[in-house]
Image 1 (cartoon, rainbow, N blue to C red):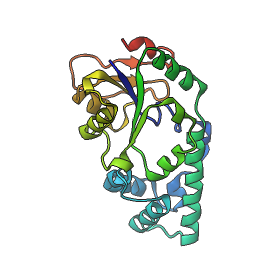
Image 2 (cartoon, rainbow, N blue to C red):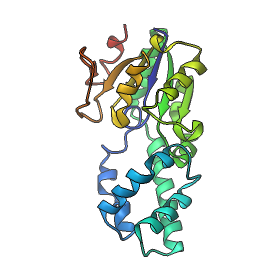
Image 3 (cartoon, rainbow, N blue to C red):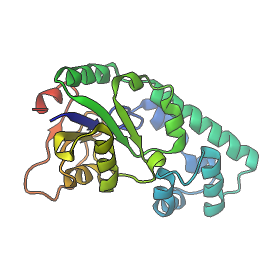
Length: 223
């Protein structure tokens, strides 16, 4: 094995487990709409968001406002977009020290490190302030390449950029977007990262899905 690809959000960066995240006013409340309407918008336009269809947060929030019938003004939308981008910058600038220790141990095994992430353009912008940059060899963001997990093409692209075969790589992620099945379908060895989100993952293969309960025990699973 030559490379470990990691998911980014809820694997190397956490947002949902932060107390500040849980205490934030939900976007649907700020837009004076309902959770159900927001959920429907994500079902209809989520792939467009993640593959670069909205160039920035303001464009995306204006689209949401029109689609869900939100009464908020242009000025309010601009403020919501600004606050959202500041939050994402904060999220990506704060990395658990244990993540750096884990990546250092992975590197000591002679393995390269990559990231394959479904991400919005504003998250890619926030990546510029993320201290993880110096600890990875390559990053593939869905909005930059126009495809998203679990589409096997994004895994093949990442492997091509690292000049390896999928069978030479691990993929480590929490399991959102069906990313683990997508990775395994290309020949990668998938491992669930359960140190932030302990969620059940549908797994269609007979062999069990390896699961790293902590950052500390992941390197010992890379053999």
